[in-house]
Image (cartoon, rainbow, N blue to C red; front, side, top):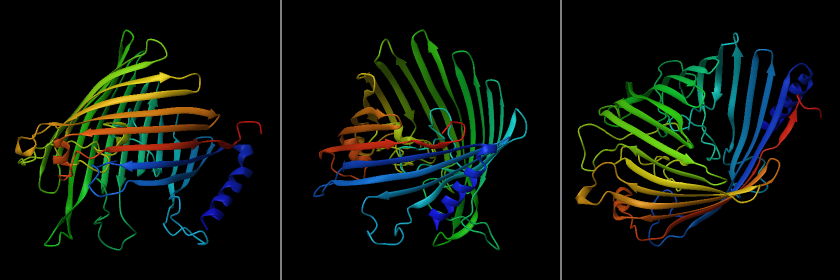
Length: 423
């Protein structure tokens, strides 16, 4: 059924391509992973996990006059998760990743409606999460303004699980899955620097009752702050500062912050970088107010170590994080490079039993090579040297076990058809 639908859409748009811009892209990326302490400390008496996961995505872009339509279909599967002779996938792996329309009212004002990726700046608060095979999308409406080097967006979303006759309670679970969202984003570019400002309001369904199943209004969390870039001679700096307030949950007030600064220097073919990020946390013995910052809807995998110990579906309402890191990107010929990065982690808030704040050190290595046009190979290895503090925040799992992770990914992203290019 899904295949027939895609083929019909492809055929109809192809017939109209003489009168509009029509482009079709593919994104196929199988990734092998070896997990021995990825996302959490490796427990005793366990075997490492190994598997191959694959994204197969088809992107269709259609533009005519002031209207742009984008549809993205994808299948995210683990090799072997469906029997070879099953007529359909048993794991419901097929989905619509994006489906939106963008209409330009005039040269400055436009609107974008539908399922879409929302991504800004360095993707700390809003990001597409492209590392995750499924990606991240929002069902939202945007009002957009652009003039010269000024960009302004207003975003709105209201979520329901189905088409109802009565009520609007929303019980869909997930990390910070919102019932309602509104935000304003403003960005200005100058000659060598830029600055943006974001105000985000997210509302979550509140439940009461003995079984916590009676809908009782909405509680809200606000996030406000700025991202900036600027150079000092040959050093390029970027940083951010955000503050969260409102409610951490239905009954607990929130007051949290994030501050980050990174400096990059590239004297030749090698880029060197130093940086830090502070994300406030709540003491393990508790506090009357929640002080734990959470970066919400960003591409959190690219921050705080590639082994995803922090803020990737975890570490919410915890002791926060101080992350001091150094990185280097080495060019290895014309088509390959090596990224090396070292993180020093410590807790932002106090741990129980006077445990030292030091959490551990992580080393990340990623080798990248372009094999040909639209085809690239990535090989990664990460190793975490965990401390007693890490064990304290990871449910007491012993920190002396080896914790490492290795992966190999092939990424193929060809343009299958482009009406703007002579075939």
